[in-house]
Length: 331
Image 1: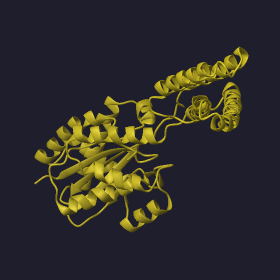
Image 2: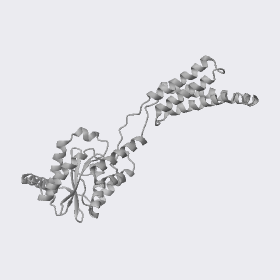
Image 3: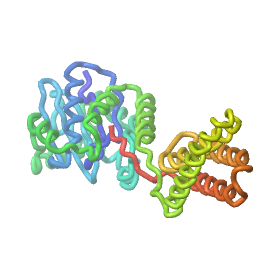
Image 4: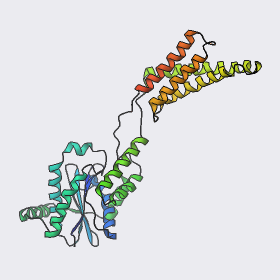
């Protein structure tokens, strides 16, 4: 019988999962304890460095140190001292293969997924021998627990704290549900792929462009002016086209086409769009063609003005970049 069933490494400040062990057991109580463990991880900042949540057959133990919490679900027959000894070994191993900067800058869950191999080795060692190989370490942990015993946490207290303060800052309430879904995925590579996919979806949904510049405002004003001139000339030309048996209908189409292109250029500059450069090039080409068709109705200065405004708008659309934002994917 396995004494240590699940291990979890999270960031204390927001409960972001950093690594977790692969599951091979799927009992109902284990799933309940894992759900409770995720709930605790969201409110770790409200609890002391050592804590225990007792269950019917399985207990939860955790140790927090240097902004990282090491959590485990153990069988109740495993002595508390050995459980915390396992967490100390886990802490030493994780500290040796990671650095505080990478932990602080982590922006997606399970960034240290390769640490799963180390967790499995430690679990196997404890599950086979019932404890650590070095008795000196166990004695030290026992003495530490006598001086600073872990706080026994009631689940009602955890749920209340989680309702008052959600540790995932600036995230919707659905993030807890997403975390539950990810933690039930047993295969590490699939879990990593799903996390990356969620981060990509969140990034697409939260895309923001750089602030509008003074040149951008000028371009918008000039585009609105060109659009107004095109629509006014087009409306007036409609009357003459009807009177002349639609001989100038294509001139009307050119004016209205140029009007639509000016409006689209404003929208394309203000908002992010897929294939932005291709659309900007197509709009610029359409404006040039419409104005070339109107050579007889506009003098060279007017034509140069409309083409220059379109060129400025296309250039600013090309050069306006996405805003640099760090996406929090703590699912």
